[in-house]
Length: 91
Image (cartoon, rainbow, N blue to C red; front, top):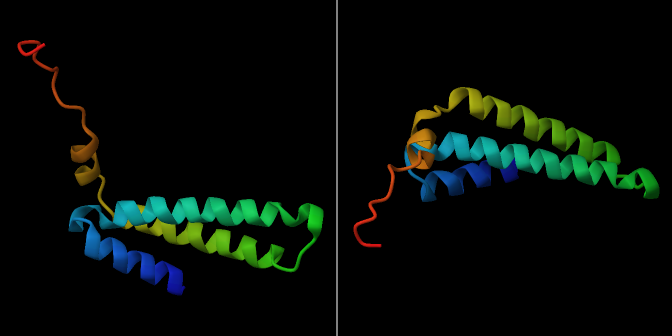
């Protein structure tokens, strides 16, 4: 929980306000993928953190999906929209 709050606080301080939730959603889903990967690794070693890693992957996924639902996509589309064709005047 502390990792989620700390990441959200850093994103809120560094990024423009309209893109905080979409970026947090992507970060949370990537963290879920990393936690799931860590949960798969112990299949060979049978370590004790296997169950906790799956729980963390589920929690990160839930938080990431909630942030994606609450966030708006328009600011992200404006940022990644390709600009018009380049002028060949200076080429």
